[in-house]
Each structure stands twice: as structure tokens, then as C-alpha cells.
Image 1 (cartoon, rainbow, N blue to C red):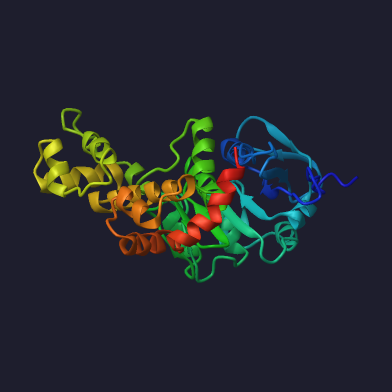
Image 2 (spheres, rainbow, N blue to C red; image 1 turned 120 degrees about the vertical axis):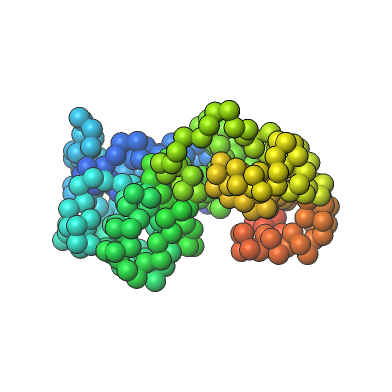
Length: 339
């Protein structure tokens, strides 16, 4: 039997197939991220929601890593033709792809096997492969902050955002470096199956289900004075009362700071403004309530702190591209069936 053919648990069920493309010089940590994140979710019958396999651009065999060991990959490029999602992790040996933005014949032949409509994603410098293949022309993308300027110079038609942890442009997603691949994969699970499933995966992986801010907060900067107050207490206080009106001056008062100092410190620590952070937390709260309760849309809006259904509708539309009713309809059934 062909080893890359899916083997569903039943005739009417087939897990979403994620194929990870392993290139010479790959980083083992990043290669393992998709297997860890997508290997966890199951439905209520214990069936895995994703099937994850690794393939190479060559026939099955060894692929060199950037460490002192190689890995044996059991599938060749033909596996790409079976994928629902293809993920390209980072590699330190991309050769002409990284140097001139040109695919090798071997890599081009492998990518040509990908079916139209397949979702594509990259982790860190894996974005160079998608860019060289022309997938990102005229589209937004990101990569590790240290490579963002080079990516923009080499591929001027891409809208490179150097500050975010990942970019979701529908059928193509790109992430910043290393651990941002975890953020990206959790986001895909959340997009596919909702926050309850993604949060459970994050809990089992012992990582936050959602990180606020962007990679700008991790770029080297002067070490803050350890005697300076943090804004974490104000964030914890706000999270406990998202359903109430929260004023910036009230958050600043929790840390005994002026509004100006608090706002500056908050942005330094989280990468976003207090207002942006509050909106994100309320959107996450609304998502959870829409998935896990029978509360009316009006009640969800009040409990999440949006006040009115219209306000919540506008914020969910801006953040997720769907209305509250459509979001509930999409994910409520999936949540009920998922572990």
C-alpha cells in the first residue's frame, strides 16, 4: 500500500493532512512544532483531527539538519500532492533561494506537486521558499525580524511586516522566527476548530494559547531597570473585570503611575497599547462564550465588555472576518464534538 495514502478511521471521516517539507539545513526545533501542535487535537470519538507527515524534495532518506545529526524522512515529494496544508519550516541551507530568490530545479519540481487550493504556511525563513515560488507576490508576510529587511529587498512585491508574530492572509500564513511557529500553528488550530480546542492543545503543550504583541518586543533593547514597576498587575486586574467599563486611568492607578508613564511602560512590555490589548482580550472572551455557552449574542456582548451586540459585531468582524452568529455556527458543533 502506498505509505502516503490517508487511512481514515471511517468512510465519512478523514483527518486534515498537514505535510511538513523538510529541507537540508533545517532546524529540528521548528520541524517538530507542527507535529507537536497538530498531533494533539482529537474529536469526541478520539479520532485525530489532523494527520501530520514529513516529506523531502528527494526520495525517502536522510535530510541534514543544522545540528550534529540528520533525520530520516520516510516520504518523498509525492506526499505534497496529498496535502491539505503544507508547512515549510526554516532552513539554513536554502542556497539560491536565500541568496537570489530562485528555486532549485529539485525544489521547484517538488512544489509543483502541490494541488491548487492547498493552504500554505511557513515558519521563520521558510518564507523564502514561498516567496521564491511566487506565492507571496502582492501579499503580506512576515519572517524573523533579523531577516525582514533582506526579505523585503529580495522580494519587493511582498508587503513585509517585521513586527508581528505571524500573518494570516487566508490560504497563506507566515510566521516570525522559532517559537512564533507555535503561535502560528495554534492560530491555525483555533481557526479550524475554535478556541476551546486550541486552548486545550496549548495547555497540554504548556504554552500560552495566545501571545499579545509582536516580535518587536523581543528585539534587543536596553534592559529595563528591575526596580521599575511592571504593568502585569493592571493586566490581571483588567482580565478579572472585562465585563465592566475599564478606563486607562484606572489601570494606571493600579500601578501608581501616570497615564503617560503607564501607557509607555505597557507598550514596552506587551508590544501594543492598553486599548488594543483590552480589545483583544474581549474578542477572545467573546469567542470563548460563543463556543461554550448558550448565551444570547446580546448577553455575550455584555459579558465580554463590548456593551452592545453591534459593537461586538464590529470588533469580531474586524478581528476575525465573521459575525458573532456565523462564528458560533461554525465552531459550536466542532466544540461539542471535540475533546
